[in-house]
Image (tube, rainbow, N blue to C red; front, top):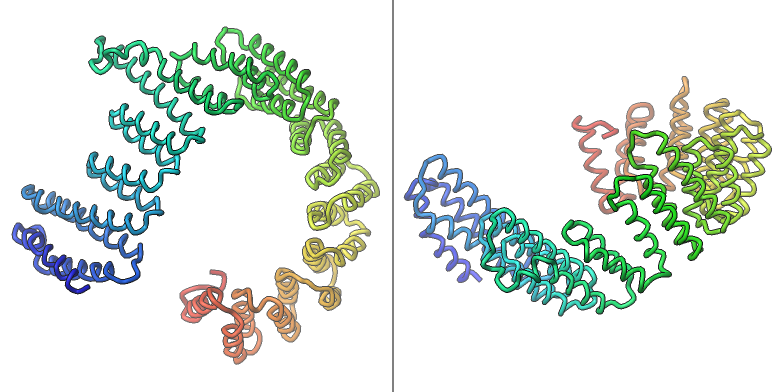
Length: 584
């Protein structure tokens, strides 16, 4: 190992001597560089190679290269770049090659090498790196696309085309590669058309290819081949349509794609959705006429394909139109009314999913149709009786419309019966907030019931319970409740903290009771909360017995493990030395 390191160090000596001789670095600086490099070389020769060692060495060399450029600017010395900069660049590239050979699966490492070479305008080397990278990662389509994109941006469309074709041979089932291949061909056509228009002359490269490239026929061939490779895939054709719509010169191909959709997939909801959406993109000068045509097509679609998917696509498009910014308020009102009508139509056909019901209720609430929203929520909870979100909306609307307390409690009981108890906390939270705000006598009864339910309910209910008693009653009642709920575990850490805070807020602080509260808390959470121990130590130091702080410290060290232990020691040390507060 030492022999290899020594050989590499000796190879660096001429470079460092040159730097010192021309005055770019001092003797002490070159000695430090040599020492640093020697340390990195020894680390690279370890039996177990570590990626971080390579990265640190590479970063050090990049920093040296940047410093060298600054020194050149400062001194005005611009000679011997071949002997100085290029040597460092070659060393960096060598380190990258070694790292990528050993850690081939790390894509970030490959991309870092490419980024370095691009920053140095080393186009040839970037091409070679992509070639090696694709040999290793030939099943990763995003790498093929990235390589083709780089070739195309560096004015080599032929290589970009060849790269994507090779990628398709390795990944024949990749739709994304076909779509990007099609995009690349259209970009090339667009580029050639613009070039011809600006220069006004024929491109020598285009001889014999004029019709095929300039008219987009090559891209059309790609589309047809992809269609043959994935028969029966309407979504793929929609992907091609989205790309084709980005290019204004390709209208004939776009028309052909829509015809394929209509002919081959007449019963697909996505086909009707695409056809209807196209009505709005056609420029006729009459937006209202186009919008009416779109709605007509959607209505025809839902009459032929009466499914939740088709209605969902129609509703989604209507929502997009409502959200469009327009100065015409009457148009927005018209679109909103149309959206409400579509929701009603879907509901009449029983084609609203749970998500669409939620969306419908939110739309109705936004436009102020409260009674309609209430009816929609009622219908939704009837159809999807286990949906916690729909029950939440129904309860909130009932509260908003001022229904009686008995009716709201009846709704709450219905929700509890239908929704799984482990998911039921949101409706409990709504009813507790409601009863608390109207100071209902039934709140305590509901809290007592919730304290004995499933842990997902009982834990937050107990937190709410002790906090409510603390705000509305005496400290003696809080203490009685605390001791009673202590027997009904589990209890959250927040429950203990709330009780302790209520005790600390009293004019006469009962140290013994607070200490007992902390002891109860650490018995449950002493091995999972470092902040709890810090609070306990702070309390004893300031209001209890300061001599207990040391005992608590060692108890915390014993109970906490791993990162929690280290975190506790760090925070405690900072607090003791005055460099941090308890809250930090």
